[in-house]
Length: 82
Image 1 (tube, rainbow, N blue to C red):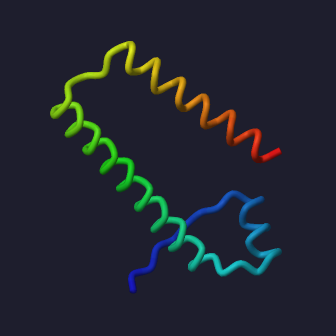
Image 2 (cartoon, helix red, strand yellow; image 1 turned 90 degrees about the horizontal axis):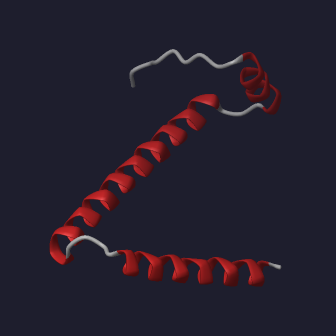
């Protein structure tokens, strides 16, 4: 397995040492998660482009409708969280 030198700010290094975290494993996991996150964003953007090609661009009316639905979901979510 190749080795890589990583630099951490003093406070982060101290926290890793203080808590006894396995720094190498944590970094591997974080890098994998970030790569996966970026791949999902790219896949989502590609899917949206396919949809736009299939159904055409959105209209102001459809965007307003979507914003209202999202608002309802957020309000419901906030109410149930309380």
